[in-house]
Structure formats: structure tokens, C-alpha cells
Image (cartoon, rainbow, N blue to C red; front, side, top):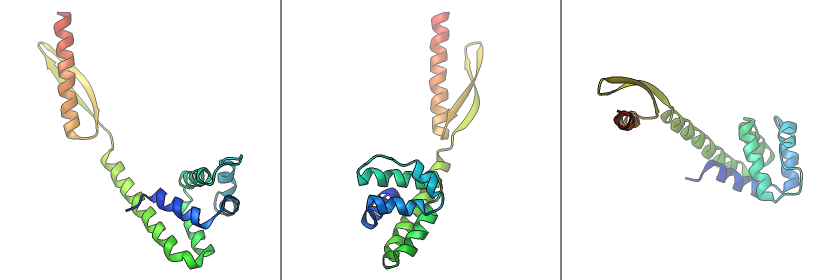
Length: 148
């Protein structure tokens, strides 16, 4: 499956030139704010499209943009709908991955000889927690043996 931004990029390049893209963006939700954040000098179409896509995501108006595209280009509605589906699927997948990568912190004790050290381990999986605790134990053990 194509990456959502790649699919969106290809679609926008097929539908617009730089001037018409800027006019279309300006007339939509958050249009003036988005327009102010875009390059002001003459830039290649590729750079402008990339900047527009980033702004649509940043301002959370991609849904509005795609809905307006369907109205403005009814003969391309199927293609626009396909890209919209790719974008939605990509966003859901990113959200799932984001949930899986949430960082957790764990307070653990590391005992070295007569000393007990409290350590905070920050990791994303139980295996990472175990690995980091083992590594910290080694480091603390080495430091204690060097200082003794």
C-alpha cells in the first residue's frame, strides 16, 4: 500500500499547478493561516506541495481539504476517495503504532553487594525494561568495584 503522504502528493500534483493550489488552499478551512506559513518565494511545485501537505496535517484540516477536492473535481471523485481511504488507513495505523510505542517508567531496585540502588527505567517494552535493569546493574557493579 502506498504511503498516505505519497498518495496525497501525487494526487495534488495531478490536479493543480502552484497558483491554483495556493488559491484552493486559501479558500478552505484555516486557509489564510496555512497560506501565511507556506513559502513566499518562487519554489518548485514539489516543495510547495510538500509544504501544503505538512500544513494540512499540522492545522488538522486534511479532511476538509479532501472533501472540497471531491466537490471541486467530481469526475475524479473515485480517485480522490481512494486517496482519502489511504490517508485514513495510514492515520489509524500511525495511531496504533503510537499506542504501542508509549513510553513507560518503572522504579526498580538494583542490589549490588550490601547496597540497594533505586533506579528509574524508561522503556517501551518489558524486554527493554529487563535489558536496561541488567545494564544498570552491570554499570553500578562496575562503579562499586572500582570505588572499593
